[in-house]
Length: 228
Length: 74
Figure 1: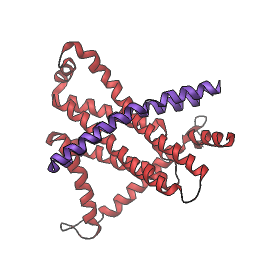
Figure 2: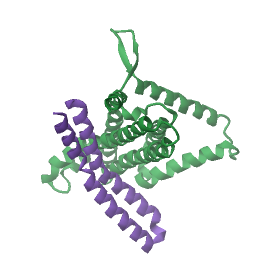
Figure 3: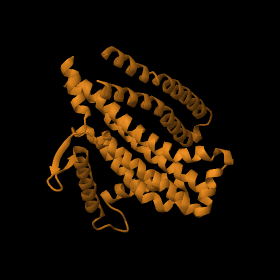
Figure 4: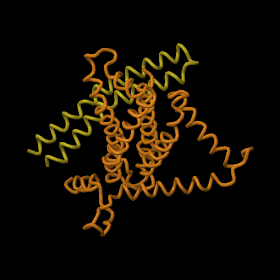
């Protein structure tokens, strides 16, 4: 029992994979290295599939167009016409989150298990949300929107700027960490065959749902900021 | 001391009760709505997923707090 708990604790710490030997050593966490791997993977896929595109799609181009069309339609349904300029960023975050949540099935630790990564994503999201509000309504309209529907509610509206990214990053982090802890426990107790069905649920289903929820909530908040 | 930490972590995870009840109610209403109006399935699913994500957040907060208690107090 003691071994089990110490093993679990060592899995929970975010590991340092190597140190850059300048300025007295900059530690590079393993989540950053896995993120680089995902970036390289996505970049290579992009380079392969974007080569010699044709007007009439043939072969793999059909599937690529279907995926891109699905992402575009999904965000355009929520954001509307004026939100079209934010779709590339949201689509990139979707692809990154989907890859990083599912990567646990290959034996890597998912980068979203590291709180620093989810905090970074949430801060980027809240900046985009507030920017979309400023862009759609202008500076005056944006400041005025804090006093809606009543001036008394302004503190709550301002508090929302801090609560939204907190809840976004904690939701993603907690879900992935929870799935990770359960998977590690199952792997320690029964290392063969039994983890497979659980892995399908915790790594694939839960990971994809959380990626979907993250970008869905971000675009929903943006729509709210742009509208009222 | 260890017993107290374990009890505290267990109490933090009790937030799951609320999330479970909330998601259960949301899903039951969604199935009712789909049975009544099958053509609005897509919209209902979207709203259900949003509600589930928001309701589930409370359980996740409880879980995170429990993990933090165990990690920092030992």
